[in-house]
Image 1: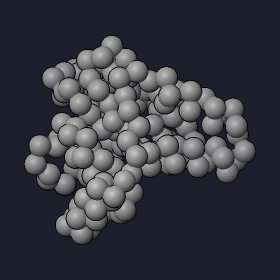
Image 2: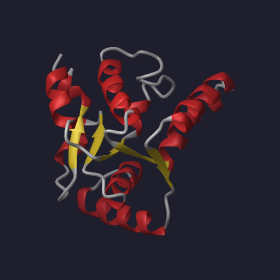
Image 3: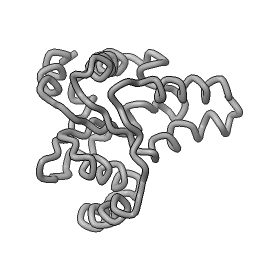
Length: 158
């Protein structure tokens, strides 16, 4: 596992935005809370860095939709509550609404890179919040070359 490389990648970051895939595994499990190996090792490092105030984390409101959809479908309200408590208690983070500016920026990203709407909104959120990195586990986003936004993929560090 390339944990030292991951630590090096995130060491000097001040503001990040996280992809839904960082939190969601097979639409129901959360990498960090459900101890999904080997990703939970990397998310633990990341969450600790956020909790200590070493990095600020932006979370798109769309991520909340993606995170909670499957537990709601399964009527697993304990999981809904657990996920909400985790997100709401994460210090040094903000849930960013998808407003007109983010939606418009997402349209330009979607048009330029032929991305899904979801990915475009998440990347647009990262750019709108002036995040220096977007942390994901979607290797297809590595092809995106947006000035001042580094794409960090967890799978490259496991």
